[in-house]
Length: 157
View: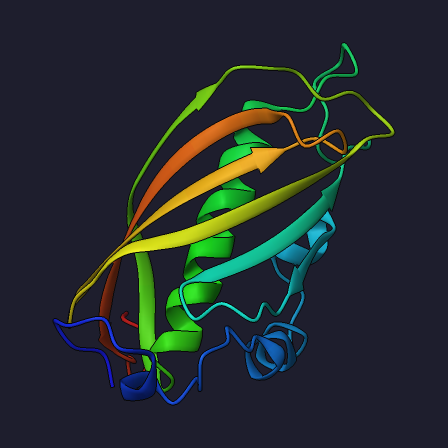
């Protein structure tokens, strides 16, 4: 389970970031990942996860550029997916997202977000996410902090 020391075997992920169970969970209900066309990719690295997103009418500003908000949504969602994979059965809530946009992506492009966990505590995870264009050049860098807690048993009134 989630703990203070990063060790892949403690998280039952066996030296890879297997997102298949999380992808099944995400696919059960329409959500932000569907709305923005995000797709998630398992990796052989225990501390890294990847997502891709098309730059299209769902994710563009009126000028045909990738929206910074869509970029931040991709980064936060990916970090949440990564934390969920590391802590099955727990609830993951993004509590801080901070990003810098250094280059543009244009309608028709595909961007790839790569998230690396830099702190994996019992209740807090910190991820550094790099969003890059098809040419591999960085478009945005984002830091995401997730709070890990027990799943609520019912919705608050």
